[in-house]
Length: 633
Ligand SMILES: Cc1cc2nc3c(=O)[nH]c(=O)nc-3n(C[C@H](O)[C@H](O)[C@H](O)COP(=O)(O)OP(=O)(O)OC[C@H]3O[C@@H](n4cnc5c(N)ncnc54)[C@H](O)[C@@H]3O)c2cc1C
Ligand SMILES: *[C@@H]1O[C@H](CO)[C@@H](O)[C@H](O)[C@H]1NC(C)=O
Ligand SMILES: *[C@@H]1O[C@H](CO)[C@@H](O)[C@H](O)[C@H]1NC(C)=O
Ligand SMILES: *[C@@H]1O[C@H](CO)[C@@H](O)[C@H](O)[C@H]1NC(C)=O
Ligand SMILES: CC(=O)N[C@H]1CO[C@H](CO)[C@@H](O)[C@@H]1O
Image 1 (tube, protein in one colour):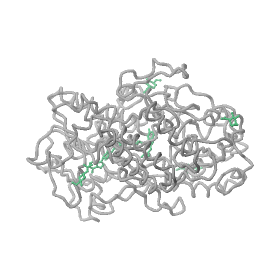
Image 2 (cartoon, rainbow, N blue to C red; image 1 turned 180 degrees about the vertical axis):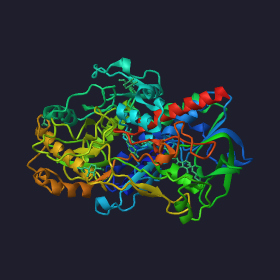
Image 3 (tube, helix red, strand yellow; image 1 turned 90 degrees about the vertical axis):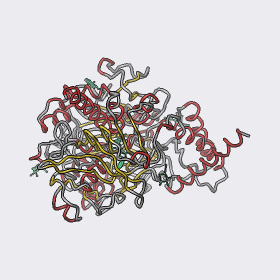
Image 4 (spheres, rainbow, N blue to C red; image 1 turned 135 degrees about the vertical axis):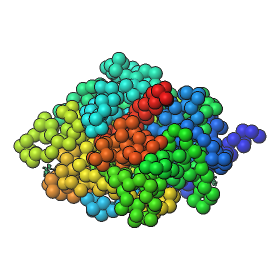
């Protein structure tokens, strides 16, 4: 009986997942006769991911914490990448009472187009042929670290030296700040990668990192092809030498092939059972409560609600409200609370609590351009079975993941990556690329371009429906000059804000991406990668003829295809007030006592790599800053 019940709930979960896949155009079509098996396998997988235990300590009914305007030392807004770190670290001190809010509990991350992910779109992008671009953000615990591509790369040492320079505090410079990367990291060695220098890696942190994802043969040969065109092999992108070079990318995947998010790593059973920490899910913070006392403005708590039309509740903060709602929502919440540029607040009739011009400025994101090739061999297209054989393979890989946690499901899509400079004369000879482009890197050992491979092609963030076997190579601009803004569309906290990264408004950005494309064409024709790809295929869905285009034509291709790499940052920048900063070097909001921001929105400049690690390290750093403050009072 129990078995039957479990089986039926498993199939039900599977059917629901299938329906979600279908809505997201990630078909397997439920109309085909293999779908019941697929449903069973998906059900098993979703069950494992959703019901992984540990979840009973979460407070699901927000009204349970707001009733008497309870008081906490720290109220953290957003249980995302940075927020989970802060909550876990601050509650290590039993005398500190902390509360953290997030919108929903942990959720199954393959559901990219699901209700667990905000499906935002940018404003129309003039530099990208007027298109609005899809901007997903994770709502769940772990935030974007629960839906991201798990690529564990930290940026370049020069990035953090720039942060330290901009804010005038050596604690943020690489020399010192690197300790916080070590603090969150537990590098798990892999026998195939013996040349990683273990003395440089974190060993005791909560986030397991290593070379444990599976990589397709094509991506392995991509690395050799990169070597062939002059990009050196890098045993470890994260050393003081900087990330320049090519390798398989390390991932937030542990040795049992399981995703590591900041929630899974930091919200352990032990942490969740602390009586001084409350984790509230399914609650939306609608504004920060402030009090004016003479000339002083102080944050004193937050207002929150279960849903748009429901009652509003309040809690009080004794020391700090810490915004960790991410680069999109942290500035939105500040603006909704009357903290931001006066003109913007007036436009929406929001009473001005504090005129702070920098809020929502400096929005920077990494633009990416995809290039599609046909792969000679069958590739793992597990999300779209087209025939009985594929369906069986799909089920096989799901079951394999479920029982052995390996196989095609253990790929993280972004498999191999190269970090390089658009002014490297070995890659871009002066005769072929005569124009001199401005150097926007963070130092001589820092990159401004990344080129990475995925085992198959996709369009528009989840459409895998290419009718042939594919391989894709992508170029990312890591240090764009183009900057945009985050503003309000309305005063409704449930509305998305207006997001305008202003992609490619600087022509130099386009020119650098064209260099990235030229390099991709070279890599794709270099052995041993070349013989994987069918360069004679002229199908218009593919790019085997793209290299014949002129630079001007390629600029159009860049503008037509640009998409986000999901890395918006710097909307509440750590910088001097006179330079448009929002927070100081201790992440305190200028002009408002008891209010801090800690997430990707504070990056003084975008890092020249993947953005999750710096959010984790920033939160580790702030936790230490706060602990020191508490000792000295
Ligand atoms: C699809 C995708 C793939 C990515 N791939 C990678 C990758 O491979 N490697 C990498 O390094 N980086 C990757 N990134 C980027 C990286 O994940 C983010 O830069 C990083 O996680 C941001 O962390 P954060 O703490 O700033 O915000 P988030 O992790 O987004 O956390 C914000 C949290 O705040 C909560 N929140 C927001 N508003 C409210 C409110 N009003 N009330 C209550 N809670 C609220 C949200 O629910 C969320 O939990 C990816 C991002 C995405 C979206
Ligand atoms: C969240 O709250 C809403 C409204 O109270 C409720 O309908 C919904 O089921 C809750 N969701 C979760 C995941 O608890
Ligand atoms: C591609 O398929 C052929 C024929 O099945 C096989 O011999 C070859 O090893 C495969 N190559 C790769 C890289 O998988
Ligand atoms: C380099 O930057 C300067 C100042 O922003 C600008 O005037 C110049 O046009 C840029 N050079 C190129 C090649 O775009
Ligand atoms: C997280 C991590 O591995 N950080 C290391 C990167 O490399 C530098 C020095 O090369 C180390 O000091 C960091 O700890």
